[in-house]
Image (cartoon, rainbow, N blue to C red; front, side, top):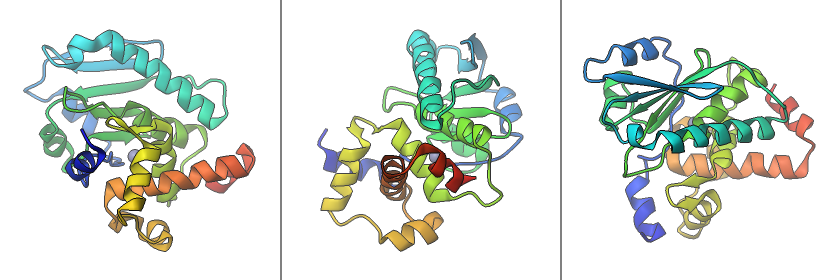
Length: 223
Ligand SMILES: [Zn+2]
């Protein structure tokens, strides 16, 4: 699929949204339509519906979660992080709206250490993005007023892809087609910008900071 068609399809639809609802996990586990199955990796409990797309791809999911954790630790500059996490795979996307009241293809709850991922043949799960959120705010520490452009940019850059396209390809396309916002709006009005635009635009900022400054300086900026 050409990137212009793809971006048209995902604008406003593809970007994972942060949320902090503490009762989401219990609502998910008691959802009457789901017959949850459980699988494990050394660091995650994987919850997936019986007869789902996820159920047919468990080995791939396990490996992706191992890779997501390795990537998160590397990007955060630490060698280990022991606390287990829960990963819920849901389908269709409408269920996320029903459960948490917002449209999202992924969600991270950093306090309760779980992520929810929409996973079906139509699109890849944002596993690296959401797990980075959980690890980032627990390993580096959260903020009462988090720097949204850094948080989302860091996770978007770490995930590396949106569908079949790299973050760089997406950002270049948005730039060439005058779809990016002024930097001031990305920084100071982050919540009002289109999600896919703001996430990809802000991904360039932490990438620049990590390239330009020492890792502990970037961490200091966050904390
Ligand atoms: Zn995010």
